[in-house]
Image 1 (cartoon, rainbow, N blue to C red):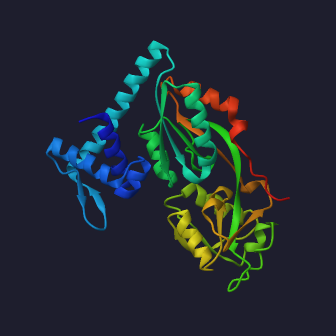
Image 2: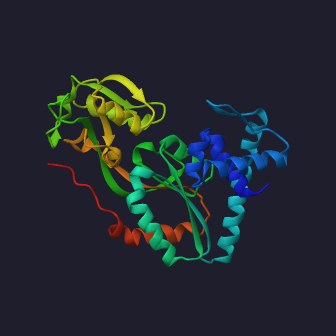
Length: 310
């Protein structure tokens, strides 16, 4: 049993979905399936119950997950201590990110960092779900995450803002059959949305973001009429395309939208939030410091801030 096998097992045990886990690990589903089967053969235990609809941990799988998380943390600390003692700029750093929020600047920066620190391996993990992203950090699957300030717990983490983003109202376009009255506006007062039906990202998958969206309405004196909550951005945008309501989404998610929806800016500072880097306090990985320093020196090269309408 190897550490990389345990990392793959932890990601699958967290996602409980072979397709999503394989995407996060940047490997094919068939390769991940073979690796998990090999792990089960080595242990002579079934770790997952699989059928066409779902993947669930067995009792043995739950026990292994608990022990694997502990072992991975111990392994990470051991490597970090050895590398810190050696005081050389070599090693591995694992970074997780929200694809839409940070891909545009993260990939060019990592390319630059690899040229500057060729002896530091950078492993990237992509997530579309804020709770899973935070879980990867808390479980020591990764060293650093790029995330939204809306998703951070109040303690236990270091945080460095990278750039700002803004919550937008997303409405159907001004083409039939919708002809939405706000689709031609560049910026609006949130109060104009008081009589609209809202379809929001789920409060289960995105609790801080959900609270943020509700607060945008409450500070303008109304409670949003929420008719549906959906698990991900793509599902919400599909409902906008079908003219089923309106929503609030971060401006960076516009890369997923097609011309049948419009992003409209909102007045006021309440719609602003930060995208940044978070890492656990006490992280001893010696590769973390040069990466943070290099990002601080070069951030303006890779980040193109969005300026809302005025």
